[in-house]
Image 1 (tube, one colour):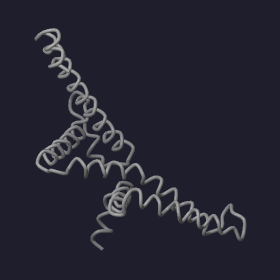
Image 2 (image 1 turned 180 degrees about the vertical axis):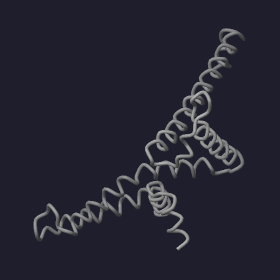
Image 3 (image 1 turned 60 degrees about the horizontal axis):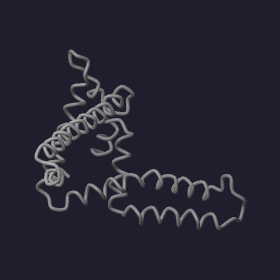
Image 4 (image 1 turned 90 degrees about the horizontal axis):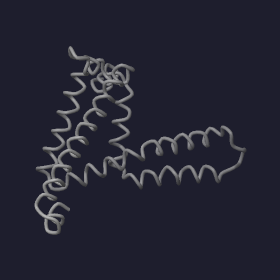
Length: 169
């Protein structure tokens, strides 16, 4: 857009558009940095994340949450820079992560159908429908990503000692 305006109006318009683009990118970067660090900080305060994320600096900013989220972001950016298909992999993981709650809903529906809670006796159509919904979610997300994300969701909701005990024993 800057070059099109430069051609039509003059060099000053390209400079204005480029300055606006830089300000917009810096604002977006700041916003995403704050959102990511705030999520891990709040999670640490609520007990879903490690207490490590709740440590603050002298100004009250969550220093460990900022450090960890920015280091992880930089690692992903470096990985994306050097990998040819990294964008597609990240896109697939993000798309699959959206489907995990639907997968668990389908599993719960299947469980309720099998245990015959809230269903009429002899209603076999519901079992078929629940099996189809579960399989469709697995198909839509892909089995590899679904298993990976199920493990990640499980690990997220477990205490660190429980996870270590599961891995070591």
